[in-house]
Amino acid sequence: LPQLQLLILEDAPGSRKALRENYDNLLNVADYCEGGLKALEETKQFTTQSLASVAYQISTLASSVLRLLDAQTHQLRGLESSINLIGQVSPNAPALPSSTPWFLWNI
Image: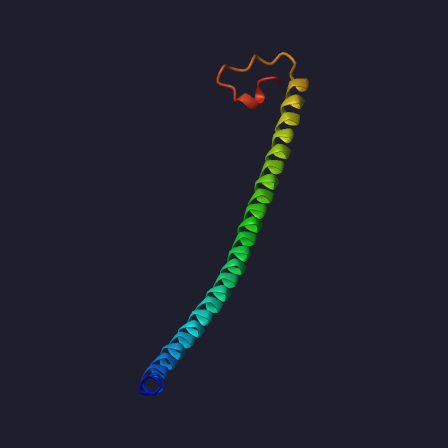
């Protein structure tokens, strides 16, 4: 009987206290994991938004470069037409010097 009393009066409360502390620790771990999952989801959303923004900026830049190239192409065609017109007006014009720009070579 004294052993049963010792178990009830001393061991049981100590064990109950240890169980309660473990329970509290497990709740803290669960809260931490839940917070980590929320942080992970927020990070994933932020990353997705950032990548979409980068893709949009690249697309915008590519469109600008294409517009620039189209404008330069149009300008070169205008120069080509002018040069062809000059060649038709003065067929006895002297040959172009060797320092002629490359875009005038096959004219």
